Image: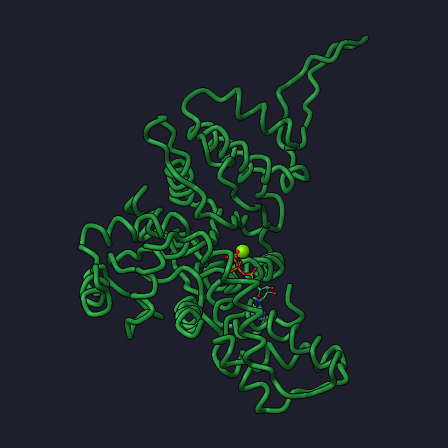
Length: 386
Ligand SMILES: Nc1ncnc2c1ncn2[C@@H]1O[C@H](COP(=O)(O)OP(=O)(O)OP(=O)(O)O)[C@@H](O)[C@H]1O
Ligand SMILES: [Mg+2]
């Protein structure tokens, strides 16, 4: 967690509004590029939910968790059991052996073991079993002063259906939540992940479009960036205070991206501690960022992919979105061997697989890593001067 979470008040408010729904019609997706602050915002929503009398369960969704329908169901039940072990249901009537044989009505706690047992004993498909457990939990919650349960999953872009293996874990998750929400149960999904997440959900189930409210986290605005830089320094009573000019320089280098703000502020602080000079060494900071953050990603690209990425970096809209056609046209201008349209499409596909670009729902592409265009331009300048 950052010492101060800057500029996400709007998103927190939107989450609070979603918690007021009854029945639940909209779930939440928090999406955005790497390092923009999805995970820390998700962590911040937890106490908000608890304050509003909601339970909170969930974890990171690794690829292995969503490989089969059974695995995703077990994942959900395991997360759920942490919350439900305080709840009880009427146990099956047991015959107690003794002097007077009598029926003893008993209650049992919804522990992990009990939940799994109920799941396994329920007939039907995995979705039916899961729905049955959720219904049971909803019933058991009614005597408690709780409004509902938030199911929060980070890195949800890892989820996928696997038609070739006849396994549809992603569709299962969507079907189950849509079904229990329709019955009026207040179980809400909060999924976070890279920008491919929403298209993946819509591809699996078109109704996802209506089922989710999508919040796209972007870089911090100037005022929030200033806060992210200055509040931690103030609260920790640091001996150095950056000047307005220094703050402006940090915002410019980082583009307001939270991960970069944190990285650059730490570097600046270390340098100031070491050398005592209070200026901002822009060139050195960019060089460090290039080595520590970008170069490993750049190294993975082939020579031809780098040619293509350099062309993209020339496009005036490279920081927003671009199309294959624009790349083809620009390559005619700059390359002796320009790219054909099919080659560009194929390469964009492989660059998407390696996490450097992503395709949005309108068929346009964007860099999947913040400020990648600027890095590529710096690399190109460096290559030209060496
Ligand atoms: N609003 C914010 N204010 C200040 N710092 C922030 C803010 N959001 C994120 N940070 C800092 O930026 C860094 C990246 O945040 P986080 O890990 O949440 O990003 P992410 O979007 O989950 O990244 P990834 O896609 O790699 O999982 C963290 O070190 C975090 O402390
Ligand atoms: Mg994260």
